[in-house]
Length: 193
Image 1 (tube, rainbow, N blue to C red):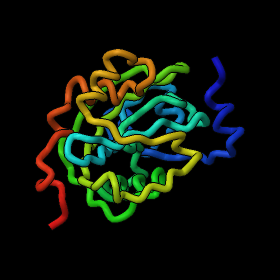
Image 2 (tube, one colour):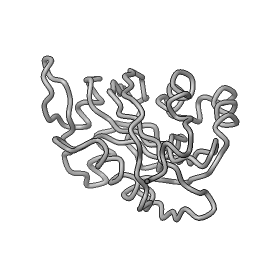
Image 3 (cartoon, one colour):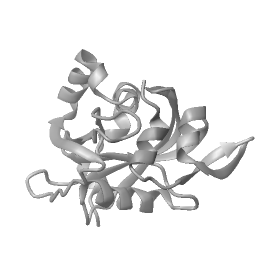
């Protein structure tokens, strides 16, 4: 198996500090080290929905873990001291070029999953849902983050995940299996006032 550190070094990546629990205290910690050690840390996940259709992304092949796998609309780690809601808005734009949506906080989820390459995601996730119209939502995916996107009915997606789990990220499998009720919401609840 390739050394994930090498992928980061080859990409010229800088050290990214994210909020993680070190000896029970939230502190900034290097993102790669967090994943290598399986340290519990903060994360943000966003589902952009049009009714029961969800926008999903296939992770870029250059990602240091789970490259090429399908995931929810976007997921990330907030910077140290970054508000989760602002992080959700930032990453929609950074990953997919989506602007103008107001993700609504749904709940906090904790999970632990092996993501391959000797890495563990042990995340405390702030989960957000944003309403959009698939036909008019402008996308401009960042190729360093996203290899492909598609809209799919969430129930069809759940069936795809059950049939071919290896093509989806562990966290998407967990969200669909255990937290589908948080993703599905009345469209009026997530539309801006």
